[in-house]
Image (tube, rainbow, N blue to C red):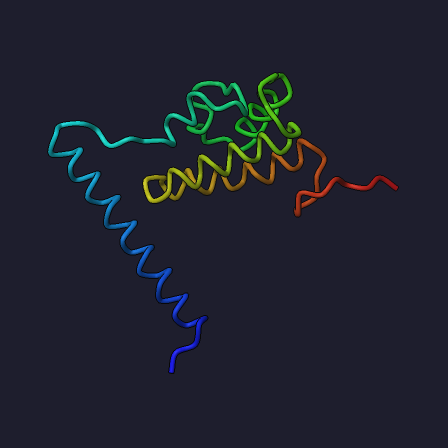
Length: 134
């Protein structure tokens, strides 16, 4: 006899599947109607309150340049909510995650190295913690 926990897991899995199907149907209907699907991530990049970014900053092949640009943008921005480090790292992670499979391996490697450079720029260790000076 199934337990409550088992029933709950099955129920949530069914709900998740229904939600995904509904989203897929909406996208298909939008395509049929000739409307582009909503790209909320592009909207975030344009109108986010986190940073005012230099154009094409994520297209650079130099991790140091990416990190310096993000640091500069984070420090001068009046629209961010967290610390400059949090805002800069958040935007870098957001871009990497949203680009997903469309991001070339070489560029993804550059942006991953930019994370390390960003930590270095802000005086953080490899875990993102502030370095203690002895």
